[in-house]
Length: 137
Image (cartoon, rainbow, N blue to C red; front, side, top):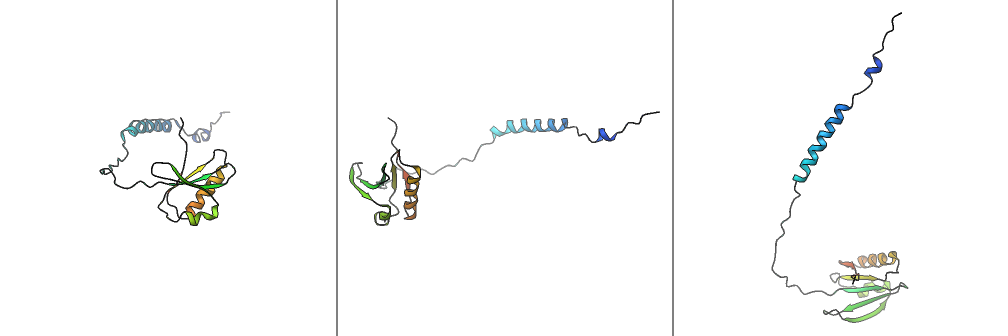
């Protein structure tokens, strides 16, 4: 008796070799053209030396026991005043939203306490809030 071969098994297989070849060619094309594409360059206008007076920021100091104090400095950087405050006193202290404020947290203070003070300052309308750090020596 003659055996009949079924062609169904051979028809269900897909030859992926041509697809892999096409993907490798596309990969090479993208690798060659990617460095040639230059990002948009922004040409900023230049001005002479700015004549704006330097605004000395206020400092909110968070101590290790989570107590707060507000420190003011003069233009030369010397401390003029350093007074303890509560978070509820922020509306009385930070009346001008244009004055920048630096938050100086002790390195042993939880990060959450620093974020709470920053959130309170933003809620008072302070536009520029930054973190004060000590540069490595």
